Image (tube, rainbow, N blue to C red):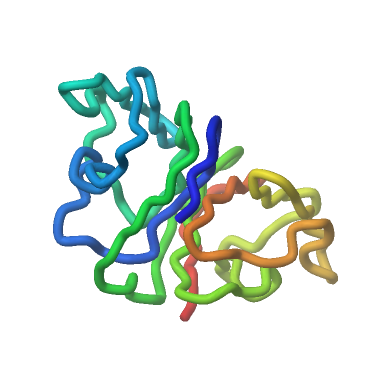
Length: 167
C-alpha cells in the first residue's frame, strides 16, 4: 500500500492477527513525530521513541483511515481476506468507507447497497482524487468509476442505514 507524503486515504481488506496501530505500522522506517492516522471520529499521533498515542489504537476493516505522514512510504499488510458480504452502517451525511474487495470493482456494483435503504439523487461517493453522484434510474455518474483495494472512500447520503458490500 503506497502512503503519500501528506494525506492518503486507506483501508484494509484483510484481517490481520494484530490490528493495533503500533503493530500494523511497525515496519515503517520513515515514521516521524506528529505523523497522524485518523478515522471519522478520533485520531492518533506518532511520537519518536514511543509509538502512536491517541484515542485511535486499533484498526478495523469497516472504515477508511486518513494518514498524514512527513515522508512517503510503502506499507505491507498480510492476513485473511475480509469475509463478504459485509454490512456497513451508513450515516445520514458523510461516512468513511473501506474497500473490502480483493480486486478492483466497478462503483455501480461495488458500492454498498440495500433495497431497504436505496441511494437518493445527489448522494455522493468520493475518493481522494475523484467523485461520483447518484442519479435515480441511472446510478453513479462522475469521474469515480471503480473501488480499489487499499484505498478509502467517503460517501455522503441523505439517509442512513445498513448497506452491504457483496462478494
